[in-house]
Image (cartoon, rainbow, N blue to C red; front, side, top):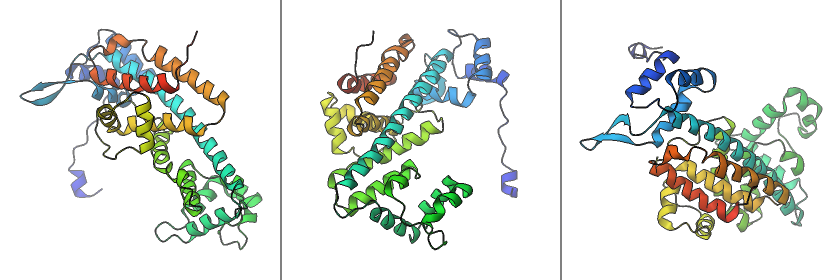
Length: 333
C-alpha cells in the first residue's frame, strides 16, 4: 500500500447493533417490524448491504430542489419483503435461463443437421482455430475448456482432441463441444455459426441473448436484481422483436422506453421473450408458467399495501403484469 493510500480514512465495519440506529437516521421506520426483530433478521437471514440496497426504490425528501438522504414512507419491513421477493425472482429467472441455454443447444444441433456441408466437426474446428489464433484474446475458449474439464478429466477424455499435444483442440464433435462451454461462449459460438452459414434469422437473436447472459451472471452469483430499478442506465434501443413483443402486450412506446431504460428490467423482459421463443417443450413451459403465476399473483402481492405510495414499483408491476397476462397467465386453484 502506497503512502497516498495510507492517508485514506477507511470506513469502519458497522456492527449489527449499530445498523438499526443508523437506518433510523435515514428516516427508515421500525413500526411493522420491531428493532429487535430487524436486528435478528440482519444477524440470521441477510446482510446489511443486500437488504438496504432496496431503499433506492423509495422516494427521498427534497429540500431546495435537492434530495437529502432521508426516505419517505419506508419501513424496514418493506426492505425485508423486497429481499424475499428478490430471492424468489432470482430462482425463477435462473431456472428460465438454464432452460434457454439447453434449448439453444438443441436449436443449434437441429440447424446443423439441415446444413448439407456441415458434419458437426467443421464449424467447431473453424471456431477453435479462430480462438487459438485470436490476436486480442488468444486461446480464450481453449483455456476455459481446460479449466472446466480439469487435468484428470482432460487426460482421460480430452487428450484425444489435442492431437499434436500442443494444447490446440481439434475435431471435437459439436454435440460434445456445446456441453463444455459456458453460456457466454455458447452465444459467441452461436453468433459465429450463424454468420458462417448466413443464418440471418438466428443472427437477430444474438443481441437479445447477450442481455440474458448479464442477468444469468447476476442471478448465478446471488446479486440483487430488484434494487436501483429507478436507474436509467441503458441508452440502447430495443430490438424490433422486443418492440413487437411489447406492442402485442399492449405496452406502448412511452412505457417501453421508460422501463427498458433500466438495464435490469430490460434483461428480465428479454428473458421472458426468449423463453417462449426458444423452449419447445410444453411441459417445461407449463412448469415455468405455474412458477411465474405463483410468484407474481401470490407472493409478490402478499404485502401489496407496503407499496401503496410507491409509484415506481407499482408501475413496474403493471408493466410485467401485461406481459404475463399475454404470454404466461393461467388460473391457479
